[in-house]
Length: 589
Image 1 (cartoon, rainbow, N blue to C red):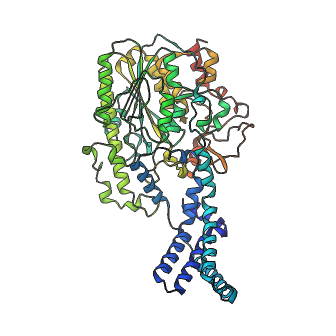
Image 2 (cartoon, rainbow, N blue to C red):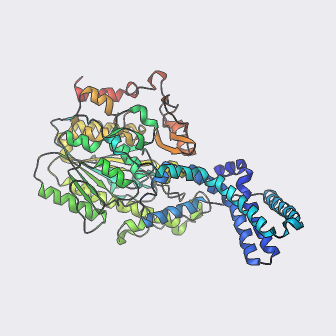
């Protein structure tokens, strides 16, 4: 971050700092009229602008359509939390004494010259009006330079309809049920980063239950090196819970692509689907959920804006009570042998972290921060101790909630499989949250865990062994592969042409990855390519498109990215031996 601020500061155009010059003009004018308080305020505001404008310009310049979209419907507490993360990122630029005094001298000398001109009789009457006007023009020009592009982007976004339902109004591939009779529970975590989870090596015991299971329980399969496709809930899950219609559109933002809902595919294949969500219907998630789950058999939500065939309002929002209540009620009231895919969408993990978990979990995981200085663990001099304590406590609560769900699964006689992942990660140690405009690696590194009940392992050992092998490959994967995993576990099978068009390799299989974090910003489109050398960009895109990386992601790609063969750039299926082998299992080739 500091390197970026330095770079933008040195490249910043002179008229962006005319705000400071204009404020000095006002300060001198107030001083000459003996308005000491106004003079001091104007000078202080100008100095603050000069010191903080590089950091502010960087943040504003990185805002994109995805960031602006989140302002449509937001929760006040979440908005305040986001503002607090912005405060962490706005830091002073270490100006040299010569640089600062140069601007002071420029402002003072030009203000003095202007004052000499205005002392002439012709201008004397209008002296203060002209001084105020000149200062205001300088300030306005500077503000326009800094905010213009973002304001135009916001205006363009406001004229659009957001996520278009027409993009999901496409032919649904007709899958056929195999002889498998498996219930699948999909647990969607909120803002869970592997870098803060004990089961993935984090030194604090934030996942006591999962960590203990992973040490010797054959039922749990822990996957590594999995990325979300975006850092915002709606945009990530829109891609994770749908299939592409045109793969050439992968370099467009997800809301501009033609897709098919996973829920629609499952229902057409003869599976029952339900959503149980204690995720508030805020931001663009209300639009996304209305598209993905519009045809679900059952929707249970804590929010009165929930949409779907059936809507119920729970008495208690805490995840471990909420999920178990509705899982149990559905199990007791539905005796159908029809397989069911249940989506549990959790809210715990979203900031403000402590407010999304019960009181009894709002205590530190351990005493680490009582014996370690907070400054030694953050990227600068900001104090993130309170954020980390709250976030780690939330992760421990999520671990407890998952333990209750696994306990429920173990009691089922019917083969049941849990798929657990997160919509995106969180950069709590930097205080940035999951703001895509300030992307950093841990915002996209997420857990992916599969749990097989004993009944599922016993009845379907080949399925279990396949995923156990995939969990051991540690191949880089993204949530763009999730829907294919769910239909595969559920036992749906497709004719070869549909499978080739819609399905991707499974998580754990080697494949060429479509771009992630695709964003529309003022300069065009940006994306992150997880392949070692960049995949071919479709030539018909009408955008300026650029691959961008933070240092940690760049190093990950350098060390682990897939090297693409020239002949395979436009055909990912050629690259994946495992994908071809899986096709043999699906089609009997």
